[in-house]
Length: 355
Image 1 (tube, rainbow, N blue to C red):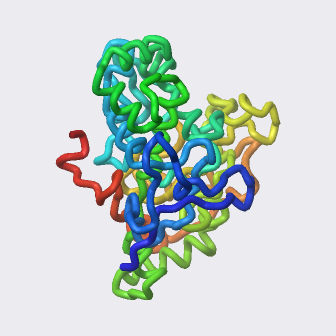
Image 2: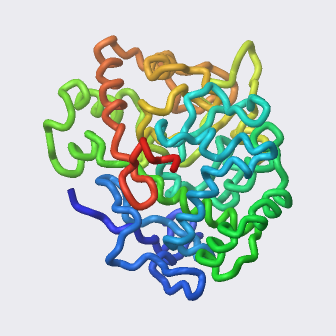
Image 3: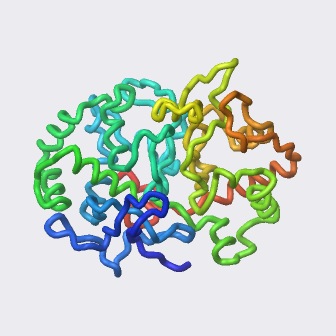
């Protein structure tokens, strides 16, 4: 397998909002990632053009600080919940629950999205309310149903730790701990959570015909053709990063969750949610924004019948009339998207992930 270097893109073609930064000199804030020392080695199928914002160049010190913060429960009000409580390495950084659960066992209203390959994302959360990983990192900390803390209390706790102050010096060149730096460190760590080298990748990029079963190859053809999956689940990330109303939230003649509409106020976004990646999809159930579909079989059946028809439904969602064999083939292909996780600088070691 060819090793790809973890570097920044000059720009995302659709937004122009990113600049090459990962290999630029970083001064006292820590050594940026040199060309000869990848962080991490990207698995087959992952683009080497990793978008990094120009004001947050990726450094080893910052990634390690972000990793510590990600697993630290003292970021929550009662020190019982960390970022990793909802984003578990063993589940491709999802949590296996129907909806999120925070402090005091409070339940949210939406399923926890997987964090793999989010370095390439253009918006975050199911409704796209955050425009960067930095912005996304701060919001759960102050959500009363998630971590229930205040940024001021978090900064006080971190500032009371000599080891944290030393890590902030290593990452940012100063021991002043700010909301912005906490967000930048966590976002840097999340940018290293990458999945690839799946059976599909070996088939697609190496021409290894043995990597996919005959059934999975039929499923791939269906995925790209009559099953219409690739209309939304496009490219190497298997997501168009756009928002669609599939009808999941339409029950008994009403929308139970307005989705993207709350953010934009556009009628076209009523009941619309961001297309999730299908990378590692067999590991990240239950499915949909509300976790209402427990298995991949239920997901395939949902789309086969054309979703739940409603006035705002995306016109690309149509009945498919798949045979039982075609459904099995489609499922075989979806399972072939489970790949090799990269976690920080190395392949994910599930036994030591929380250390």
